[in-house]
Length: 98
Image 1 (cartoon, rainbow, N blue to C red):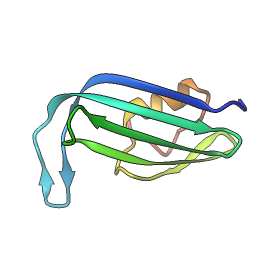
Image 2: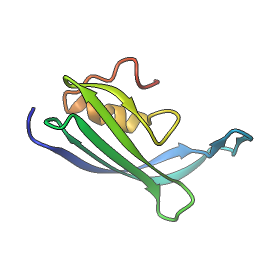
Image 3: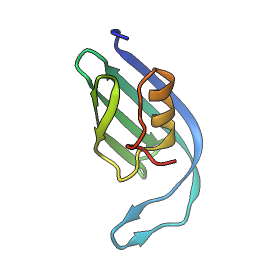
């Protein structure tokens, strides 16, 4: 697994804003994910957003020996990103939530 991995996924999901002061109700939105990982650099990044600018997040993905050890940008790494990393052969146990 030496080649860079890159994909775009577009899907409808239930999503909401969560802040320290509370959360909005869930609503269905079309979310676009851009995910890219360089196994050689052991680093990746993602971006996710809806058609407007209401929902947007981006962050980094850090790996050690093919295992995701850290991420930033969101409180909980979305399952769509975790699943894609697993499909590419990365381990994500202990870092993501199902």
